[in-house]
Every structure is written in C-alpha cells, then in structure tokens.
Length: 538
Image: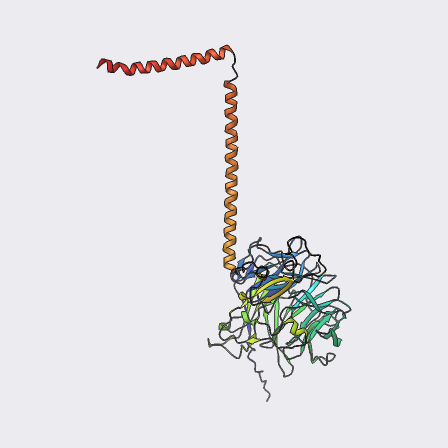
C-alpha cells in the first residue's frame, strides 16, 4: 500500500485575488519600449510607471490613494531627453527615485509627500558617465546613497549619489549587461550578460571572482541572489524554451536545479520575497504569475500555484513587505500593467481564521533605515540590512528625511570679483539623504539669519496664496486696460465735438453767440418778473 505525503508549508495555500477596477489605476499609457524592463516601481508611498511621452522620456508617480481613472494631463516626471528605460525607488527613502534613459544620463529625483502638483523637470542630481543608453539602475540594499547603473556601452558603474562621484567602475563585460543583483549584505554582485554567461564580482574592487555559462538560449537572462547565498536564474535553452535554475556561488557550472517551464517568448522576471523565501515568476506578455518556494529539501524549488488573468501584462511591480496589510495576512502585493491602460492590483494572501498578528508569516522585514554609509561600505565594512517587526504596524519616517544638494568648490574656478563674497557660496554639490533639513546652511555661514524650515503643508499654502495674488493682479490689469481704453475713447469724442462747434468763425459766429446770450438774459428777466407778480398782488 502506497500513500503520498503532502509537503508541510505555511505558504502552500497562498492565493491571489485582483482588486476591483475602481480600486485600481486606469488610463495609464504604459511605455511601448522593447527594452526588457518591468516598467514599474512601487513602495509604501508611491507607484511609479514608465509612460509614453512625446519629446523625451517620462514616468508618472501616483500616491496609493489616487485610484480610479487618471487624468490625461496628470503631472509627470519628465526631465529626460530620451525614453526612460528603468526606474528604482531608494530603499532608504521612500521619496527618492532614480531613473535611467536612452539619453545616457541617470537622474535622481525627490518626490514631495503629497505627490506631484506640476510636471517635475529638475532632478536633484545628474549622474553622467555612460556613452550609450542606461537600461539598469539598482540601489545597494544596506549602504546609504550607493547606486549601480549599467548601460549598453557594457559598463557597470557604482556611484556615491551623495557626492555624485564614481566609486567603482566595472568594464570587463564583453556585451550588454542584462541584469545585476547584490547579495543580502551587498558584499557580492551577480550579473548576466548577452554573451550567455553569469559572473560574480567583488563590487568594491571590480574583481571577477567566478563566471560560468548561464542559459544556452540567446534571449535575455536574469539572475538574483537569495537571502542565504544561493543564486536563482531565469532564461532560455537552445530550443527557446523558458527555464529556471538554482546555483551555488562556488559551483556556478553545476546547477542544483534546472527546470523547463514552457515555450513562451517573453522574458521572465524573478521577484523575490526574502522573508518567506518565495519567488514569483512574471513573464512579459504572460497572463499568469507563477510562484515557488525555495527550501533546503529536494527538489529545493517547490511549485505552489499559478495566478491566472485574462489580459497579458506589459510590466509589473512588487510592493515591499512594509506596504502589505498584515491584518488580512497579505504576504505580497503586485501592480500589474495591462495593454489596455489598466494597472491591476493583485493581493497574495494566506488564509487564516484568526485576526491576530501571524508571527510565522511575518518575520522581521527590511527597515527603511540604512545600515552603513557609502564611505563605510567602500572602506570595507559589510552590514546586513536593518530589520524590524511589523507587529506594531509600519509608520514611514521619510517625512523627516530630506534630499539636499550642496556643491563642492571647484579649485579650477576663477574667483569672482567685487565684494569678496563669492567663493564659498558658489559652491558645492554634495547630495545627501539625511535626517535633518540642512539645505540652508550657506545663509547661516555668511552671517545672515538662520533660514526657517517650512513643512510641505506650509509651502503648499504659500504657493496657493501666490497663485491667487497673481490671478488678482492679472484681473486688475485687464480692468485697468479696459478703463483706459474707455477714457481714451471718451476724450476723442469730446475733442471731435469741440472741433465741430468751433468750426463756424467770423461775424456769423459772433452774432449767433450774442443772440444766444440775449435770449438767455431775456429768459432770466421773465422768470424774475413772474416770481415778483404774486407778491405785488398781495
């Protein structure tokens, strides 16, 4: 007698449910670029989607409460001169986002808390190095202000965004870099390349530690580090069948698992949840989301289920665990872009009868604070990302963080003449994401009064007042112009009448004038005589 033992797992019954249309985002013109990107980035505050834009590249940023149909003239982030290819939110500040574009420039933006009220065209900092389009931007998981970019010039650059300087330059890739991913503490970097190889680097020294053949197919491959050090890859075989594999970093040539899925053409994006060790496979053009659980027992990657929809997807984004609803046992939330302009919200939940906090479903998750600075990281300090418990709920601390720019003095600049005031203030470009609003230190250092720190609400009220005053001024100017035009027209009529009256000259005119005076005196005399008559009779 044989019987089958069901594998024990907390996530064996995870199921997906799409929210109603009125709780989703509609009328979004998703980018039609052929670049293999998710076109979407999401955090607990905002949803960012790369959209079609005439005259350059742009992406839209929406607060999560702005659901429903989005206006066609909604403000965009539109400072790029070419189509935007990739965007990524900073994991340590929910208001900061980086974007890479076909114009070869990487820009870092700061989004106000309430969202955009007008189109944003001025970034906080431009990162200029790449000679061809930039198709990949990636933040470091634990170090503050460390950003990785990769372009079609086969170059991988790691920046210190706080100073705008290059920390590491990796130029050993022979072809386009498809994907890159840091390990859990950011001490290793894995990349996949168009030459079908997977490589592991030391991101501080740019030293190549190991490389191997990834997938034999010629289409794009992707690789991610799992929390415990293994590497998960997706790609194609020679028959263009999609497959995934699991590998150990010290034996890249020998996959632990290699499984064929189907024969679809779309590139698969592995979205990883480090808390639950679940991997969600989302293919471009697919109408399904497959999810797997990685465990230490064979076959190591366990298929759980498939979420099926009717519409193919153009892009997808995964909400960090900080933005999930723990009261409904939500373990993942996806934002899925369809071809018809709808951004569909999909909630993955684990059915539980109790309404209490489920500690087994929610271990400590990634916090918003950074574990190290960029300077400490490049000097050799490794630190695991900070974590916290969701039991008490999550409250964002980004409101107290600010992105400020202070430029470094250029020693090659000529000193400005007159007043001797110019050298230090002309200054300085150091962009830092800090916990104090120290953007106005120049005024204080020059002896002036300290600048007042205004909240976002105060700034908005001031801007509204300025707009109202401008409207009143325009209205009064129009009224003054109208009155002046009327006055000028009246003066012209009086002048014409005088010219007509004074046109008769000579004795005839004087005679008529004397006749008119005589008639007026006669009338006056008659009136006085009639008034005196009744008194005489009395």
